[in-house]
Image (cartoon, rainbow, N blue to C red; front, side, top):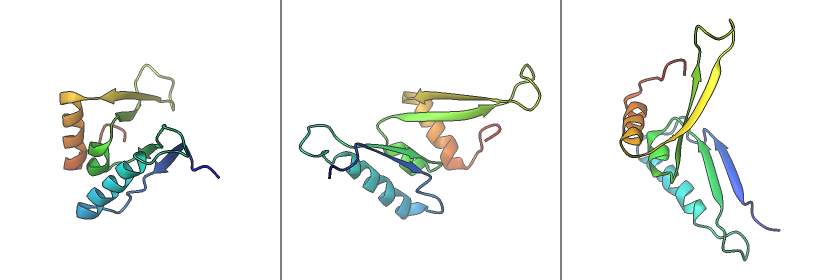
Length: 105
């Protein structure tokens, strides 16, 4: 059969750090270079991660945050998601590397 067109990894890098995390990030990046069947399309890899090594190698970096605001009904929260690039991405990677938790993470 045909290999998958998209693969989703949910914290595949849990409990992995240092050189192992960099190696894992490179393996994920290599996976995106595989051709899907005889098509010219390539496999898409989506990785949910807290690892700056994995996030840094991605073509696209999305940040997902849970937000609780006083204006919301008690016991509810919102989830915000957006892409970061340039200086904003560098700041996010630095935050991840420092171990600083985002508000309500």
